[in-house]
Length: 407
Image (tube, rainbow, N blue to C red; front, top):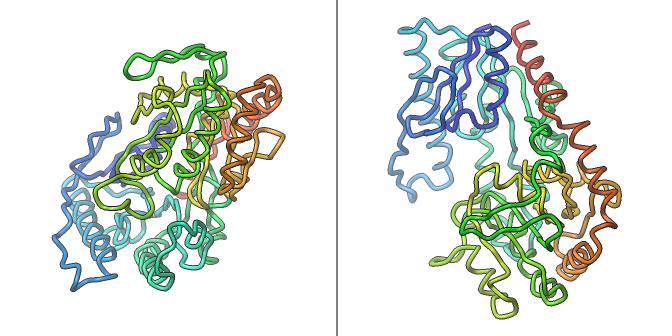
């Protein structure tokens, strides 16, 4: 087959799938934005895209759609050039729902099958919109804004032949017409590398070292923000550090960006919630690393005594599954995406997202008696190997899904 990946951050979610398809003998190419600096072995063409300086007052709620269709048109032109200059006629195009890149593919290749990676569908009436009352804004304006973001998503869905998403909970949020052609297959976890015995120590940026046996609490999020419960976690820490004088906290994540509301002007969510508790705990025992290399992250998950993972009803982070693969004792929020993987008292623990005192108590208990969680650690690893292993489960299923498209 001739397969074209389109992704503004390629390889993105297709890091393992694209090379696997090459190994199967398929002709694989990619199209990405010119500013993407990811390195890949896949032959890659690039398109240039810079959003117009849109007049917000004139476009209002239509601004998102305007940007998406502009990108979609540029991608369509790039595909037309591939077709004319390089004689590219893919059997299957695999793209992401999020940025408008697939909106006009059928105008270029009407017979090409489109497989759409469908990460999340915004719904003005789902639990995400009213989940956290602390950040509640004008309810109607919020719902209208969310509904306006459906426009390009629905257009992308109608222009695709099949859909792919990592979890059943994410699949459940998509419209009914999508469900019969939805494939629930996770991208896969590298359990052979992410295993409990892979590392026995970690060195953080700046030179701080921890080994197995140290009282280390970890928290990981691409961005330190409310969507991943950063505010709840920070509020739980003072009691934890007071009760466990030898404990240290390692917090991995960037200050900027994120999924939800922007922080107050002139600050970041990181700084806002750190300032809220800073006078109640020793800053020398709280280590903010920013983003770290994958090997450092893996070592940290092998060393940690307890890993906290919180999430709104939103996309499940790879980091939670990776921590479980390393045999970490994971305490997660009792929210639907987390509950799909963690069964309380079986392969981890669950705590109400907003119950700060319960988080403190659970973390203190985990630090005080790590042996009590040995069965949870073993079961966590077993869950990931059986359900999410890259080589034996997810990658074969992903390859089969793509190959079915041509048939």
